[in-house]
Image 1 (spheres, helix red, strand yellow):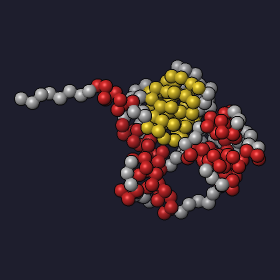
Image 2: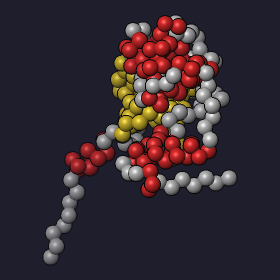
Image 3: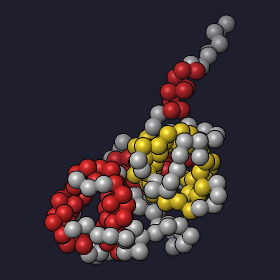
Length: 218
């Protein structure tokens, strides 16, 4: 007679709590309905680490729009500057984790809805997009340039702009030319976009780009 097979609850817990690092911008809102622009840095089935410039505190509750899962509830566990640690009300599925990782790989920046806060300056929007693509937080940028994190938030929201002396260092940190930082780059062609997306998805999934197939339905 075969022996029954028992699952290891500790191993299941480790798999459940395994965090996936990814830069992903999503929409969210407070319990009071105030819209939030939320940048996810890592996520697991039980919680996530995000950056949000809203005035949040431990035990506050927010709603987050995630790929595949839709809107999910979470509670703030801790805050440190602009960084916020959250715990989901109910663990999300592995399918939601995979969907978030795929969306991050294919589109590292997300166009937010009309009711979400958005920068009023093209430079601010471009800076945020380049920063997220590089996987940097506002705190990372601030530490490198020797300014405060609220200064970076002000740049991205279009309230202020960095001094000219800091622009070269900012462009170097973001891995772009000064011209690309200051001016919108030309739109890439569809083939270049598909090739870049295929490579990003392959890196995220730990495979090679020749094994990734992208289908476009028009």
